[in-house]
Image (cartoon, rainbow, N blue to C red; front, side, top):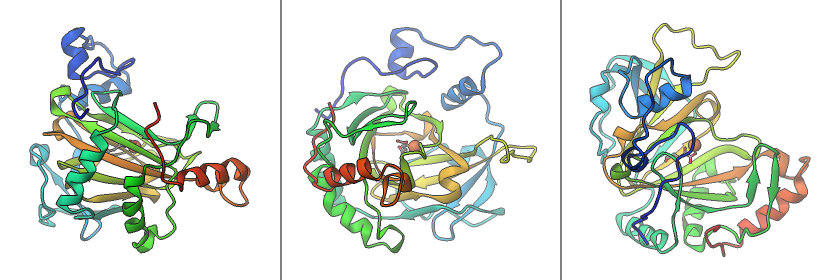
Length: 303
Ligand SMILES: O=C(O)CCC(=O)C(=O)O
Ligand SMILES: [Fe+2]
């Protein structure tokens, strides 16, 4: 089941190598919307005019600006890349834990994950979901069909809880994403939902390294006044753990460019509930139900 073969899951402006080749789907040059520009940038079709900084997990600071060529060639196998030269940019809200899983655990995780079916997703990704059914537009949550997080993730959640900043982290959703260069896999810059999903987004990175690109959100009160837009690239080595919270979670979009996927990569992302669904919150009852199912660790992939 490791190899997913089938049509892609791209909708609207999103494309991958499969639909670009099969349907000759390309964007016609005209005045692009910002979403289209992002899509083109992800495909490397628009020259980058951004000042890019490289995030260093040791000093929690981004250093730069770096030439974009400096980021051209993952694989990122080690965390020694940062030379701490250039300007230092404070970049709070990122934690990278190198070697969070061992090589043996990684191989076993990938075998177990691949034993369940993958579903097509957007931009050349395929996915597996474990979590409650959510309608984000209507803000509705249903537990029907949710069987909990899978048993294989339990020891890793316990390991996360050994870290001080994750001691009370109780995930209720797991999403596995598979990226491959032959499908042109990428993920457009986005913010994760913050109505349902809580403060910490936690990802285990498997098989190969990549860069997570952080770009500032454009919203009232958060206008970027710099003349040259800035991006911060976070190296994510295989087997590392990434935690996004605070400004990195809410003030910066995160995404992965097509060029940053150089061989197969799996991201296992775990999400927690917001206060609205916890004790004292307006939706405490449904939250309690979701938590109790999640914590059974008897889950199978949501079909
Ligand atoms: O692949 C990753 O590390 C990022 C995934 C992500 O941003 C998401 O699933 O929302
Ligand atoms: Fe995300």
